Figure 1 (cartoon, rainbow, N blue to C red):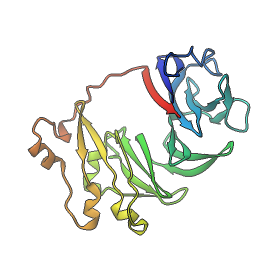
Figure 2: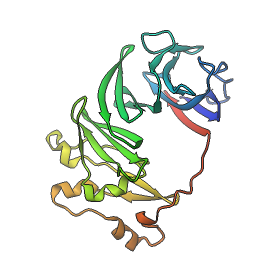
Figure 3: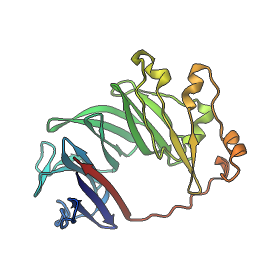
Length: 264
């Protein structure tokens, strides 16, 4: 198994591979294309190959590249591998059930796409202000995603992708406050009976309160007529946690990031 790690500090990015005994030299010696620095980066292994999405600052263009063992190949019809131009934010690559997905925002519009051959097929184009911290999951052929919020005017939530332009919210309005900070982890378990997918799908979201995680367990049980766990109930049995209305964001990670992927 070969491991890849991506790390960045402020205006540079480096990718290294680990073969079990030693680290390679930097696989991105020329900062990958444009002279401008990367603002956000995501890596993923798909079909035993390493892919990378780069949000290039200051134009905020989106570039996707694939590592062939010695150089980086472009993924798109143009020579630079540019997927979108201008005001692109929060790109993320995800290998879900053997399909490579790419999601990102352009201003207030969320794009979810997947790779077919050397082209990108659009799964969703959906406009919503204040989206943040998108997490994507798939159960059978059904896509779901969660979003946090960048404003008090939007509570975030979890959504089912119905078609390329329409989504269905799975969180009742009175409880969307649980998801304001976005999902730290969102997973889907395929149901035993496919016809029961919508009511037996298990999704879990964490909300961060002063760097401590709250777990919203089995929230969708209420879709089957069962009770769900509210914030006040959780706090009553776990007094060391702070309830949502007293939330204070004490995290401060600026200009640095790291992620690790494994290739068989």
